[in-house]
Image (tube, rainbow, N blue to C red; front, side, top):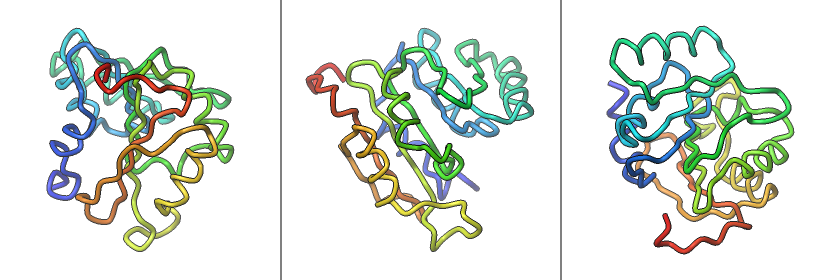
Length: 179
């Protein structure tokens, strides 16, 4: 059911993942994208499933063992920093609104974990589709990441009720061939 509105195959195509890459699933929840990312980066890659909820992390760990995913590592985020090793991609799906109030400084810290050519993809519910503050206007997402030193490199409109934007840190001007 969720596949119809979340369109994971199309999202993964935009992320342009390759075997051996390292990806962070920020706000991984129950792992909807985590396992798909793990398949995309293969056994030589690594997926860091980041979530504040210890029950969600335990669920991801247990299912990863059952499904044979040895390339998934759960991460408990720290309040003052992201706490990630170097990564090629960061995916944030409908969790942007849960990030700390000092979002610009949070994303500046996240930039330190990005490898050259690294990208941050933010999928966030649009306020008119979701109630109770579990959504953020795309312009606000873009404004916060711009303030943190990122530039938008792509915006996609194939997800109903959600914005999908991809960013690169401004200080990172790797050639397109290295991506």
